[in-house]
Each structure stands twice: as C-alpha cells, then as structure tokens.
Image (cartoon, rainbow, N blue to C red; front, side, top):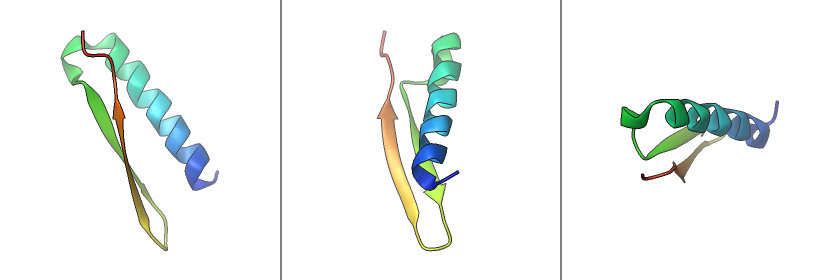
Length: 48
C-alpha cells in the first residue's frame, strides 16, 4: 500500500467512526510516516 492509499483508508475509517459517535470531534489529523518524511493532513467532518 503506498502512502496515498494508506491515507485514504485511514481517513475513511476515521470519518466512518466519527459519523457513529457525535462527541468524537469535528475532524481528524492524519500523520503518514514513511522512512523519508512525515505528511500531515487535516480532514474536516460534519459539524452538526
């Protein structure tokens, strides 16, 4: 699995979990760590 595929799978899992639990927050920060670098991406979720 390459870093982009890993990010997508992680993001989908986190967003699915947040859809089920209203008190879990309004977004997630995903850190993808490879041997060369660390990528940080922020995902915003529903805010209702």
